[in-house]
Amino acid sequence: MIIVMQQGASKEELAEVKKQIRELGYTPHVIHGETRNVVGAVGDERGKAVLQALESLPGVESVVPILKPFKLASREVKPEPSAVEIAPGLAVGGDELIVMAGPCSVESEEQIVETARAVKAAGAQVLRGGAFKPRTSPYSFQGMEEEGLKLLDLARRETGLPIVTEVVNPRDVELVARYADVMQVGARNTQNFALLKMLGQLDKPILLKRGMATTIQEFLMSAEYILSEGNQKVILCERGIRTFETATRNTLDISAVPVLKAQTHLPVIIDPSHATGHAHLVAPMCYASVAAGADGLIVEVHPQPEKASSDGAQSLRPEDFAAMMRKLAEFAAVSGKTLRLPEGA
Image (tube, rainbow, N blue to C red; front, side, top):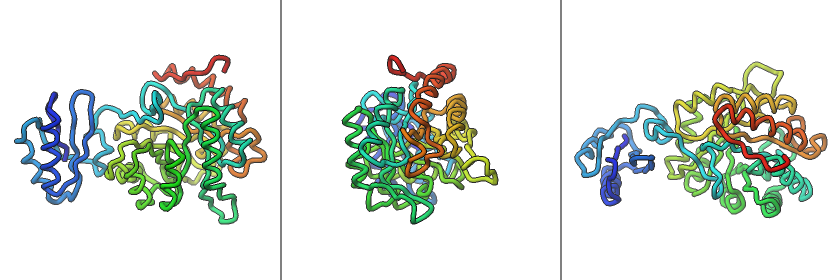
């Protein structure tokens, strides 16, 4: 159920509604709208009829059942789109197209700092880089772990770019949270519910990637795990799904962008690198993603892809990334987004 507050309802009236929801055995989640607040009452669906009585409380306009299985992520709760702030003045989901870029894996101080400087000069607003790497083979490079996090922190201090990096194991949540501005959940962990619950208890943006065999509804239910724990700062990321096609690493589901936009208020970004697996396909998919309405992109960039410890084939060289960003600004403008490029980029 959602309890729609009247326009201009007082803080005291809102507090009383939250109190009554708790007394009825449900958990209140306040969603602040542009003109009024709504309160999601989350709990056992079987007894939700008792919540209807809250309609008589001062400041309450109506009590409405939520039909979607994902409650807090749905547009029934929040019709207008949400923007998730990453850093002061930088938010995913607003008028600005947000581009996150960097290497798949942090490999050395020289590599991550050089890449950070290059992507910032080209117009990227966020540095991506993996310190913990979930790999299909146990013999593949697994990442530099905390040392990699320290190098990301160094690159942030050198460039001022906030960082997004993946957390793989629930036991590492506290460690990664000390360094990351945005915590990434990879495709293999989309339904790691223990991890999602822990991330839901943080006051930090979470970039949630779609699983390679996850439906849209399952994807949104994973987001619901984070939201239901109290963290409203969720960014959805489409990164391709597994199909019978072998020409690309995965099949980028471009249609997921408008489908998600119709069903959820959460911002949506695209990862064209993991979706395609080939550097020459990344730029076209970036343009298509923006045209489809994506709020941002997360792109792999490496100064020497041929020497990369992981995913070199899908990583752009800095000069190719810069060229792509210049053209991307044109697509952003046509799509109603802005992409601010540094002078000389």
